[in-house]
Image (tube, rainbow, N blue to C red; front, top):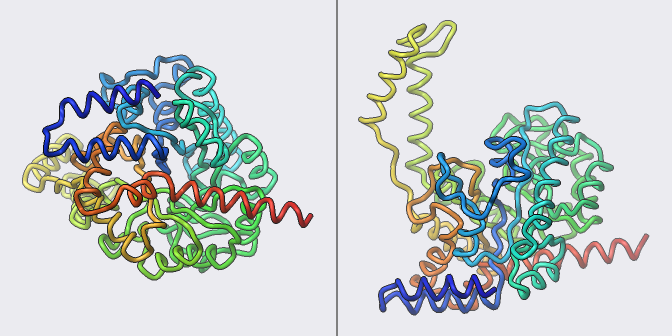
Length: 409
């Protein structure tokens, strides 16, 4: 806690007087309420880039790494982070049993953080665990399994993940699976299958959160109709602002409010800004237009020429800038439609590469986003809900449902 307070004091000293009130207010809010990010892919990024070194490398300061990580201990402290749901994502294209094996490795890596850095991290499964870690000056490590394919169609695997400390399951990732449709793949089930409904109810029984990021809108609606506990969207935006199928429509936002859940707003540029989403589609189309072996493309069979022509296209069509203010627009919209009790933060740091909104480049920048909400007229109490209060309430709701279901057995 001392390191976090020193970071806040340093921030205040370097901040112009006109902005210091916001910085001081943010520091006060985050001293009382843990800031909890619903989704960070650092464990998977470490696995992909470092291999076996991930188990022993120094994670305190990775700011000089190339390409840069969005996360390390020093910047988590500067960001006044109180809790983090670490995503234990694996590729949905892997065979089921391989997904299970790699998920277990990812869970093991998250658990090792608290063992290697006990003064910084503490494992957490419940809302009270998070509060205890925050009071002790530690960052609560929570675990999110990012894809229903990672249970390989087996509720026993789901129960094993819960026993190891997993706090949520994202029902799908980018692919439609045997029991649920993804937002970014062709639908096969018109929502959840009967087994998918059993998964939702088993998550309720285990006290794990049902995460509806990545799923089709029909799955969102089916899960909200089945669940007995509040749900989360661990990293999603508002579809009214950017009509990406990964985002949440106003109709579903109203259902989330009735359910008592929370939508944790994502920073991925393609989900934040319609202009960036369209530019990204145009960029991929241009690559395909230039070189699509084995039959198509203006530069087919000439990879060097295709690369040069694509670079020329990029110079003429630079990516639109996405900003912190645009992320704040999503937060404002979710709060307007669902209510301020139903919005949170779900950055997707270390999961979307180096392209992030201007002003939100790494985990040190949460205070800047909270200060922006204050500039827009948000009270300290409402900022506390956004920062972590809402997701703590949802976690407590899931814990109550677990207790009720257990008592009936």
